Image (cartoon, rainbow, N blue to C red; front, top):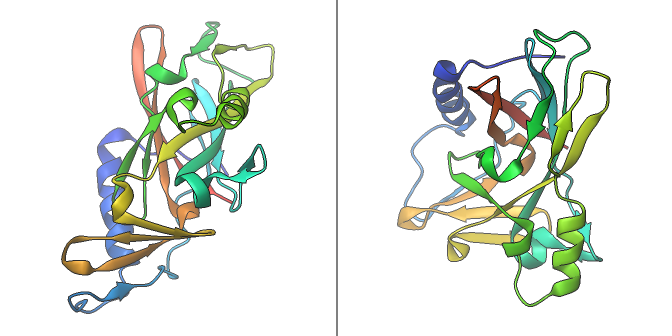
Length: 208
């Protein structure tokens, strides 16, 4: 299924998603909000007509150099595929420059995380850093002749003390001691893509 969300509707969609995800009723101080079950999240693949097609996925227990980076480093690794549709509005190739694409990950409770470079994702572990760099979304051109660019985009749970991670389970400790259980596969990924001098926002759900 292909779908697009126009920029003016994105904030409304997120607000409705967060609101509808509530378990209902007033949460007592220091209480816990469980993972929403009524919502299926956002669509995990999308298309801007005449521009690009893309999808995003997150896998529990994702390992790099044998290390579960979410559990050990509070690092969310989202796998992204981006390509050109078979019929494009013009004949221009699209150049991908990940650090200029303003990747952001909006979690289930509305928390927004900015992407970080693989070089700065961890400290003091050269082998792990090398593995993150090797598997990251790379620079390059999307060509009408076919093929896609794919790789990981990284997000760090910050502030660190506001999140608890146990395996694939993530809890956001909010103000007043309220704890919110999060399902990362129901997050929203956004980025900007520039083509022909025009920047277009892109929104896709993260699926498993």
